[in-house]
Image 1: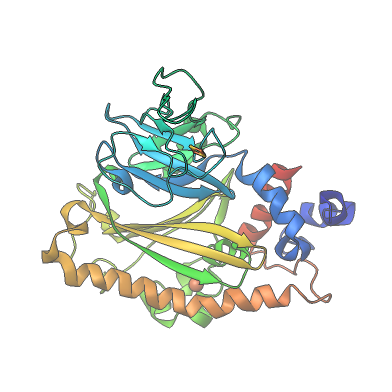
Image 2: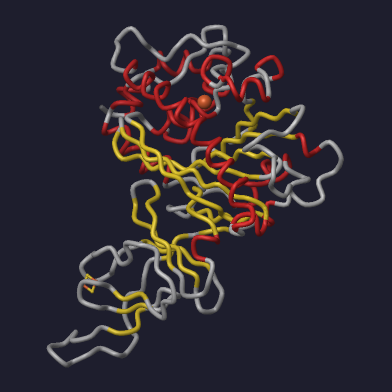
Length: 379
Ligand code: FES
Ligand SMILES: [Fe+2]
């Protein structure tokens, strides 16, 4: 189906109504149609800043980290000169993917197919046997890797595939402004956990910024920070945010691990969740940050990475092992509770009786805002 077939004037009209007063979300085809996902790759993920990884995944000069963003193979490289660069992860010769797993200690990026070698800065270095057996091209002249604009925010790496997004500083400033007391530079990656859902990537995020289900699905989280203290995630331009103060830390959230350094009094009871459209979610508790990153495989198939960051040496020092495991166990429990809900919504999107939903004005503003952002970005 084409964009116009899916986003009809009727859908646009209902998207524009107030949440809780006739406003609605995206129609089913946005979650089930393969053409729509193709369009998302072209118009949504390529045109905006996307979380691509973090410095800890390529900590040393000579490290390279392949990933997939918006369906495109991408390579992050830590140069010998200390620079972090992003490239399209494809050899200029016959189009083989250049690096297919994280590598360390590289002096060059050598294609596994015919051994063209590129410097860590992306420039072409050598083409062995290029003019016949034993006749090497050592001139260093020729097509280098195609760079992708990138930006770092603390240790997080963002890329913009089409190079036409707004300046990164403008994109990230509202999030920075909401976390004035949290030194995100103190974080180190503890663990990345992979989850798989038989559901569209949007439902994985939409479930993240749904505070309404905490009472029904997450009894432990509800006891920690009850529904009565919450409201829905609130829109803020290209962000959604929810923030509250909880009473006391518990295992997996603030016990046995160092807190963000120099938090002012009271700020150690701060919880925050952010969705950075459309790329990722940032969940902040006093001793951790977890970034949710999704990899759409098919309209009804998503891989999610949960990157769990802890403060400083707590991320790697075995002395903190038990408490760090407590954080991962907490996330594991939460995600297990969520899998079914996410997949129920995907199944429901096969039903002609669902047409974008009837929303709660209190809880669901975030969902309608997200739907509007999707349509706006893809129009
Ligand atoms: S495809 Fe890379 S050297 Fe041939
Ligand atoms: Fe949940």
